[in-house]
Image (cartoon, rainbow, N blue to C red; front, side, top):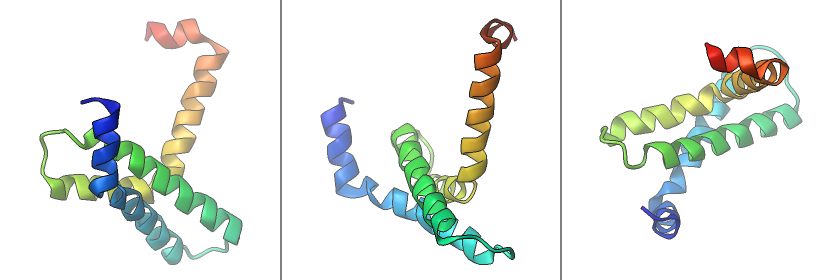
Length: 104
């Protein structure tokens, strides 16, 4: 699938996926017992939205049910800070010693 048709498909219905991810993060933040700033709230919701959108691009042609995909989009939204922190941690390990990282 070329990029133009992929973007057309996103505009036709895929745009709702970042909203599902953002809703997952809003639910997480609403159930959080501690205090957080409005800046943290907005950052987390935006990150959840972006990661869910990325996941849509990855899964949109996968041969799995739409229900399972919708669950994945929501879950990614809920755990997006952990996903981002994990990717950053892996990048830092790779940066320190790329040879060791690639040999495993």
